[in-house]
Length: 156
Image: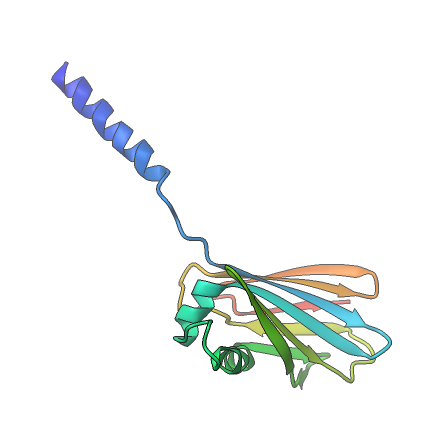
């Protein structure tokens, strides 16, 4: 009887531990092609505390946006039809637990292949997953990035 109570106690402990809080690490980027301006516009959504940990600066300080810009420029690369593109940071916005980051690349007349290297937060959080949703001339594509899979490519 004691053995049964002991085993059921251990099983109960395991069940309770499975409901413990687990931090989820992810970012989401939406990519839209704007035909009129021949521009790819990027909107990235990240957790405020996570990006703050990565760049080691408080999101309420004046230098936060400049550090986010530098971080995104160092951790997000875009290649259109095999050619590297320069991304231009257009702004960011802190909204509670979320940071929105806006950037773009221009001069894109047609996309056959789009390759992205996305290492945002991967070095800080080993279980980080970055999702990228791409909209181009009525086509939708999805990419995911994680440690060991930092580069992805789609064709249109």
